[in-house]
Every structure is written in structure tokens, then in C-alpha cells.
Length: 248
Image (cartoon, rainbow, N blue to C red; front, side, top):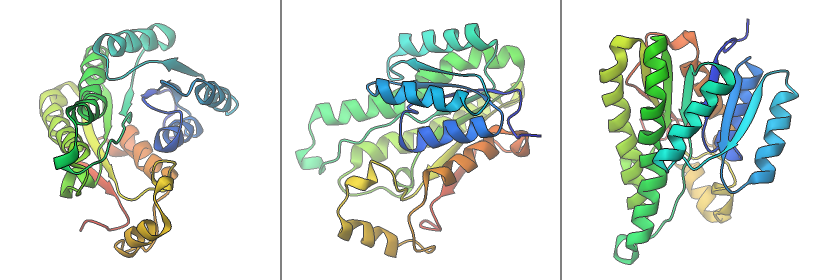
């Protein structure tokens, strides 16, 4: 049987990159997939069709995860459309890099709002139906940068480190209701975002990775399938690094 058969999953920020890979892998494993996109309307519509072609129910929602009311409305819409919510994947995120001395208040605030507040917004909204069902898996996408920091990314590192503290706290709060909360920390994953780096920077990253290559979005998605399925039913409050051994 498919690992996510009969589960309803919500994936935020799924129009491209890691989010898109997660939505596709979930569909391949039999899940009903609800997902969000914001600016990439055409990509969102294309993904909806691609997921449905895999033989599962799927629906895209144009929603801003960093907006508290929109997050609440989104979860209500998913429940109305599919009857329940088993797996929440908080993936929406952005970067606005710069050295601290040059970083504007807007660069700081936007990254914290989109990366960290969105996780609070969606988790809070999803908690009610999950508590009612006495079941649920919350998967938050953090980063190796949230564990070790990175020069020029103090805003991004702070947001991703915040996600780790939040994930562990929610695991403690909701464990008695059979709701699990875990985080995945990708390392250097080859996506549109990292594709903007020059060849020298990419080579530098690759050298520092024991497996000597960048990761693929599908490899992060596989870890999400594990944490969303019953295979990880006794795992909560953990940070799973998908980084080729970069941080050991």
C-alpha cells in the first residue's frame, strides 16, 4: 500500500523547488494534496493538473502563509473541501541576503514574517482539526543555516533557527494528543534558488559536502514522506538533516 494512502496533506509554497517536489511525492504515495502558491499562478495551476494526473485528489489555493487570517481561512477551506487534515508541511520561505551592516529593517522583517510567522500561522490554524482527530504530523522546513548560521544571512538563519525552537515546543505541547512535530533541515539543494549562484560558489559548497554533490528536491521530499507516514509514528521533536553529511 502507498505510504500516504487516505491522508490529506497541505503543503505551503509548492509552486516550485522543494515544495513542488514534496507535493508530487505525496501524490505518488497516495495522499490527497492541498497546496499553496502566491505569485506563480500559472505554475500553481500546472501543478494542480499534474497532481490530478497521478490519480489523486489535489487542489491549489492562492494564499499568503505569512498572513494570519489567510492561513486560518486556508485551513478552513481545506477541511471544507477534503474533510480533514492529516499532514501539514510548512515549506514557504524566501531569502533577502545581505551583511548585517547593510541589511535594511525591511529585509529583516520580511524574512522573519514569511519564514517564521507563516509557520506559527499555519500550525495554529491546523492544530484545532488535528486535536479533534487526535492525530496529525506537522513538518517544518528549516535549514542547515538555522543550525550553524551563515555570513550574509543573519535574517534567514534567525528565521530558520526560530523554526527549530518552535518545532520542539509544539512537539512537547501536542504530543499527548497524538500530534507529532518535526523539522527537516536541507543542506545545499539544487533548486531555482541555488541555481542563481555562480559556478565557483556552487563548487565551494560541493567540496564541503562529504557526499560530494548537491542534494535534489526529491531527496528532501522523501524525508517528508517518511515523517508524514506511519513509519515515523514514534518520532517527534526532531530535526532531520538532509545535507549529504555537511553538518556532522
